[in-house]
Length: 139
Image (cartoon, rainbow, N blue to C red; front, side):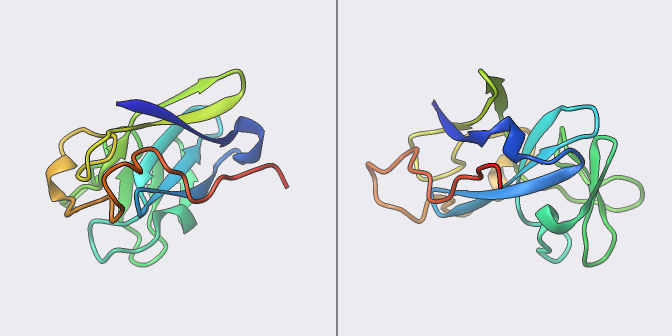
């Protein structure tokens, strides 16, 4: 597994998100009001809504389509809802956000209980592991 630099921490708004594309997979990178950073597949487990466009509250995000609440740390739906979305390991070094990316086509850097629900997350060629197609930068 390798770590891919997806942009500066300053480019990620508090209680907000940015989307990066790694291996053809849209990954939403979130920052909480307390400054914690998380990364999830940008797809709600309910109807595929863009979680990056949801409202971040505490360590959760509410899907903008049908109000499902997803835990940012686990990717699990909360409350009565059932389902989960894939999570990715994240770390911040020297004010840069890094996402863990596996060198294989499936589950690119995925962790947690939802890694099995990904069908060919890469969409790319075998050798382009870690290729980032979009990087968020401070506006």
